[in-house]
Length: 121
Length: 108
Image 1: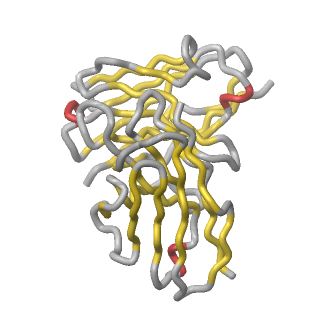
Image 2 (image 1 turned 90 degrees about the vertical axis):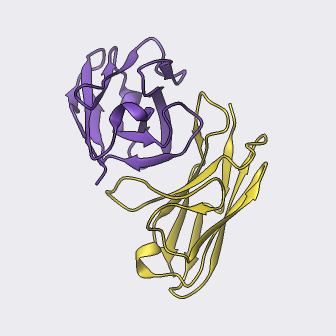
Image 3 (image 1 turned 135 degrees about the vertical axis):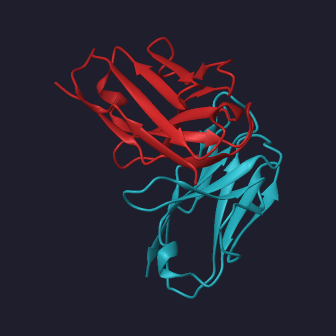
């Protein structure tokens, strides 16, 4: 069974940092591109970042470029998102989502339950 | 960036009815379109990919159609567990992947 479990969220002041993790099991992690998608309270889904199965071609939404860094450790089946210079508008539930293919341009076929990031003073 | 527009925003229907949800892309996405379902407090779940292919374990009452810029999700014989928010998402042009704003299906 495919499982994705996010962790690392919490309450942080504006300007602060967090490192989110997505621990996976039940599939060949390195064979799949991975994504972070966020959802602000009461709002819709917003793509944040992607990375290829090999760890190549990290990409980011304009709203987070320069502040967020996606990475992965294929030996530990884990995806990361380092988030720096947090803003109030970054408050959201952050989901990790598996892409069907190892590269991009395929559907997001499995999702974790999310980890909540709250940015407030 | 491709903008995905869903309509209507909210749909009130009764169990047993058939509903059609719409999604329009601001430019062609071929058939690289997915539909996701999200229930309160839960993660999104993939229903349809490739505009019309049901994901594993998805009941046959869910069907998708369309291509290029116009897509529909039809749910037949609505069950109580189908009341949720539905999102369309394009994966044809990246970055970024983009989602519609969602259609909320509520019980009439």
